[in-house]
Each structure stands twice: as C-alpha cells, then as structure tokens.
Length: 64
Image (cartoon, rainbow, N blue to C red):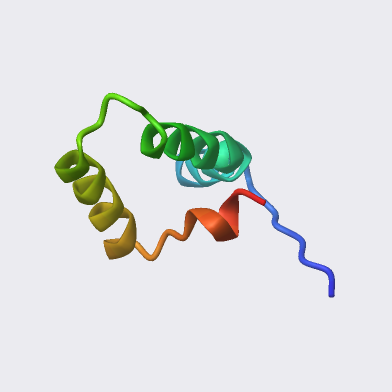
C-alpha cells in the first residue's frame, strides 16, 4: 500500500497541515518524555494518561 500526501504550501491551512505532519514524530517523542518524567506524582501521571486516552493516543503504538 502506498500513501501520498500533497500540500499547497502557498495556502496557510495546507502549510499548517504540512508542519503538523512533519513534526508529528517530534510530538510523539515529547509526549513520551513527559509520561516518563520521574518527578510526576501518580495523580499527575494519571491525568496525563487520561488526556492521551481522550484523544486515542497510544504511546506503545507511536513509539516502537
């Protein structure tokens, strides 16, 4: 299967969509780092994980 994304970078909405695509790996790594901060107490970690769950973000799926 092949997927191709095309963006018209002269269009502001497409330029933003392009930036989100190319920065998605960095965002996943940042979120993973946040979930691994040792100074988070259990309640804070649960809150972070709850937000991820609301948006159906599975870190095991993203960070392999």
